[in-house]
Length: 88
Image 1 (cartoon, rainbow, N blue to C red):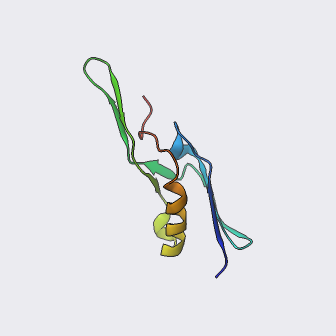
Image 2: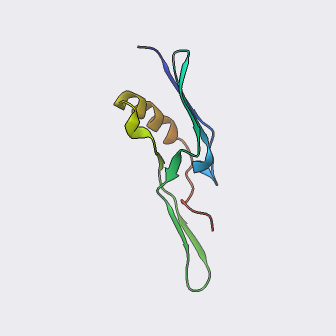
């Protein structure tokens, strides 16, 4: 099997705004921006204080790819410092 190369350039504070590129051997099979979502949350309490909870970064198109590619992508996305999932 050819080598799978995965890159993602999203980073905190807008981790879900990055570009995910997947190549198998010399062939690029995926190249898309804004394709991930953060499972974190954010909010403002009654006193106006902001709060955030970091989450994980989930690839929206994962189900269209076989498990071995999903695992390669998850390994890269797990290294991204994920934001809260919303802008305050």
